[in-house]
Amino acid sequence: SATLSLMAEVEKETFDIEKADLLVKDLRKVYRSGKTKSYEWRVSQLKRILKMVEEKERDIIKALQEDLSKPELESYISEISMTKGSCKHALEELEAWMKPQKAKTSITTYPSSAEIVSEPLGVVLVISTWNYPFLLSLDPVIGAIAAGNAVVLKPSEVAPASSSLLAKLLEEYVDNSAIRVVEGAVAETSALLEQKWDKIFYTGSGHVGRIVMAAASKHLTPVILELGGKCPVVVASDVNIKVATMRIIAGKWGCNNGQTCIAPDYIITTKAFAPKLIDALRHELVEFFGVNPLESDDISRIVNLYHYKRLKRLIDDDKVSNKIVLGGQTNENQLKIAPTILLDVPEDALVMKEEIFGPLLPILTVENIEDSFTVINSRSKPLAAYFFTNNEDLKKDFVRNVSAGGMLINDTILHLTVPSLPFGGVGESGMGSYHGKFSFDAFSHKKAVLYRTFKGDSPTRFPPYSAGKLQL
Ligand code: NAD
Image 1 (cartoon, rainbow, N blue to C red):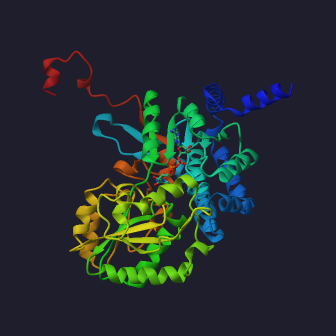
Image 2 (cartoon, protein in one colour):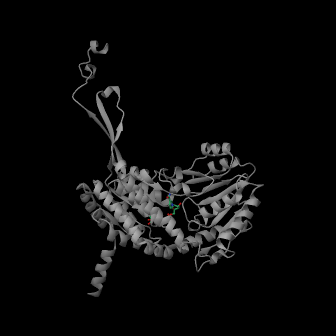
C-alpha cells in the first residue's frame, strides 16, 4: 500500500498532456462565463497581486537570495518595486484602456460611427524565465489580467525557489478559477504547448522561442517572444567618462551580474579612447565591489553550474587567453565569476559568437566611432543598443542607422522602466512588445465596430447595375 500511495503521489505530481488539456478546458469554461471580462474582476485581481507583493516582500527577497544570491536592494528595486509599479499603473489606467476608442468613418459608410473595442483574447499562456523570476512572470500576467483573460503562468525551473514561491503565493492570493500556475521544466512546458491557447507570451532564449512558435503555429496561436541577443554599448570619446562608466557598470554587473536580457554585452569604442575607458572601469569597479569582487555581497552569483561552466568556457577559449585586461577570477563552489573585461577580442572568439548573459565584457575597437554602426548592423538585431556621446548629430545618426528592439542614449537599462515605451525585440531579439498600455494591447484583440442606421444608401450600391447608374 506504501507503493500504491507513492504511485498516487507521483501520478498527482506529473503534469502531462491530459492534465494540461483538463486545465485549459476548465479555464475556457470560466472565461466563457464572462467572469474575467468585468472591470471589477480585473481590478480585484490586480489589487490582490499588489497586496501579495507588498505582504510577501521578505519571502520574495529570500527566494531571490536562494536562486541567485541577488543583493536585497537589487531585488527590491528590480523585482518588487517594478512589479508593484506595473500593477499600480494598470490599476490607474485600466478604465481608460478599456474604453472603446472612437474612429473616423469614410464617405462610403455615411452616415455611420465607428469604434475600436479592446476585447480579451481568452485563455493565454505565459512562459517565463529565471533571471528576474518575479518581475518577468508577474508583469505579463498583470497585462493578461488587465486585458480580461484567463491565464496560466509557467515560471522557470532554473530559479526553483522563486518558481515554488510564485505557485504558492498566487494560489493563496488570486482567483484560481482563472489564474493558475504550472511549475515544471521541458516535459510540463511541452504538455502545455500541445494545447490551444489564444496567445502565448514567452520570455527566454531564441532556441526555445522557435520551439514555442512552432507549437503555436499548429493552432494558429499568436505569440509574443521576448528574447535576448548581444546588446552593444558604443562609447564616444566626448563623454563624461565617470558618469558613463558608472552607468555601464550599473547596467552590467549591478543588474544580476550581467544575467539580464538588456545588459551591455560588448562595448565598441575607438582605439585611442579604449585605454582611458578601461582605466575608468577598473577604478569604478573597485569603488563598487572592492578589490576582491568574489567576496562582495553586492553582486549576484551565476544561477547554476550549467551556466557557470558555459561562462567559464568563454573565458578559457584560446582565442581570448591574452585578452583579459581585468578580472577573470572564478569560484566554482560558490558559482561566482568576477567582473571581467576583455580587450580587442577577435570576432570569431566564443565570447563574440553568443549572448554572454554573465559578467564578461569584451571591448571592440574601431578607428572612427561611426564604424561601430556597421559592426552592430552586421550582427543579429539586439534587444537594446546604447550610445554614450554628447554629439547631437551622432545621436541622430545612431537612432536612424542602427536597428534594435530599444535604445538608450547616455545610459543603460533604464528605458525598460518607462511604461509609455514599448519593451520588446526585433528580428532575433524577439517579436511583439509589452509594458504599460502595450501589455494591455498585447493581450487584447482590437475589434473594429462600425455602426450604421437605416439611412443613407446610394442607389449605385444595389443591382441591377444599369447604364443609367454608371453615369450617376
Ligand atoms: P530558461 O532556461 O528559464 O527558459 C525559459 C523558459 O523556457 C522556461 O520556462 C523553461 O522551462 C522553458 N523551456 C526551456 N526549454 C524548453 C523546451 N525545450 N521546450 C519548451 N520550453 C522550454 O531561460 P533561458 O532560455 O536560459 O533565458 C535566457 C534568455 O532569455 C537569454 O537569451 C535572455 O536574453 C532572454 N531574456 C529575455 C528577456 C526579455 O524580456 N526579452 C528577459 C529575460 C531573459
